Length: 617
Ligand SMILES: Nc1ncnc2c1ncn2[C@@H]1O[C@H](COP(=O)(O)OP(=O)(O)OP(=O)(O)O)[C@@H](O)[C@H]1O
Image (cartoon, helix red, strand yellow):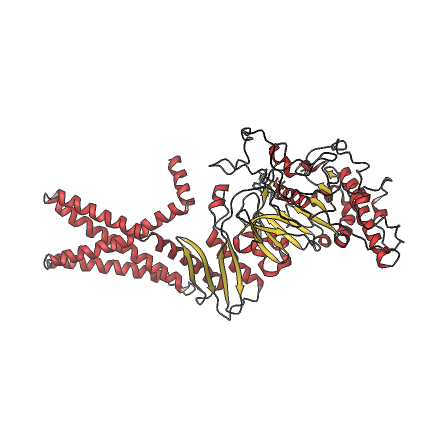
């Protein structure tokens, strides 16, 4: 019993199996109707029926028609939509047709069997079964399409509250709906965002169904995007072409931009080695949201490393504050161009107040000196990055840092410092203080968001925030809103060198270490076939040849070591929140390179010296 139930569950989850069952059922209705007609024709062809048989058939027909009428009349609730009434009548008519078809088939077969013509009876039964199966299979695709459109139509009309909402002009590939137009009447209040949101949610529900329960279901689940065409009063629903479930990180050889990941061909900036990629050159602060285990930290780690190696952050990564203390950014510790990677409240404060704030201050002072004419050298501030992972956890432990974040969010950009803020709960109240969130104008979600989360993350884009709900729940699958463009991407998967030593070549060298020679496209070990979820799996067998790997055509240049924090111990937080009205300190030069030294208090060889705990929940 349990096995049967599980099997039924699986059938319901498989689109093909589901449609086969549906088509068999629907085809059976049609088949029985065909059988009924054939039986009536054969019956009439054999000669006029006896008056008794004819009367019986007439009575049966009357009963059937009467019952169908009764059923639809019962449904004739004035409040019910005409579509619902029509549907009830159709269902009743089908059922009665099936019943009559059954009788019309069984009666002659049993009569023949009773007359001793068993072989003919079996042949007739066999032919009837074949006809039913044939009808079911032949109508599989059109019926699946009609079923989906009917569901959409009912949903759309229920939400729009009018019969005049139309669903049509659909484009298909097999049974997959590629595009459909949903036209609403001009007098429908489409200007109200709540109504538009409801319609989009309903359409997404009909097209994508409930959230998948496993990665495999997630892979099979279609993604759709919607656009409003207010001139023609319609909603355009388009299927997003599927992306691979994993894109191994590699050196794509681009310069001055980060490879966000593989995207759909029409949104790609470049096609590199056959992979349509989305590129990103940060010009604004970024908010990265997404539920746990959807690949936020790994994606951001891959982007940061890619940016470091391809001239996007010549000023390096000033600091990484890991609010979870989970070690997602630990592979960056002690690497060239990377400042402190902080895991505890004490380390967060140190990193902020010794590595980030002084650097922003220094850059501001240089700007002030230049703009006020006190300096003759235009300051050059190479773009630098600060990563704040799980900012709400940082603030929960250190609420006194709020003002520092607030000030950084407002001032860092002008000083050439980009903030990437990560959070699991964008919808939680005050998860990210409003003043900070408002400055994060680029937005990304890894995996789908709840309605509230999508609204919070993509509030900057107006109506289209609902797109954040339709992202496939796969690790590394993201929807980006950057530079005014939406793009679905599969972010590169960059494992940690401790797990997969071959990826070491993709990371910046450790401080004081020569860069590792890079193979042309290191290292893209394919996911084990048949199971894309197992990561990179065990290291591959050693190569046959002992020759060193070829250096890449254009070797990556890593940024210099991160800027030195203030030599003197930091004062209280309040002191660092002073205004910038003071006379600027003497600028040290147009370039930051001369000032870059190892951090005074942060020892990359002993990164966990101050660490009190590994993980904070
Ligand atoms: N780009 C990717 N492609 C494929 N799989 C990935 C990708 N990124 C992450 N994963 C898988 O998802 C797992 C979770 O990733 P990660 O820790 O980055 O998620 P997260 O969203 O930051 O989770 P949390 O918020 O709980 O830290 C990884 O261990 C890895 O197996």
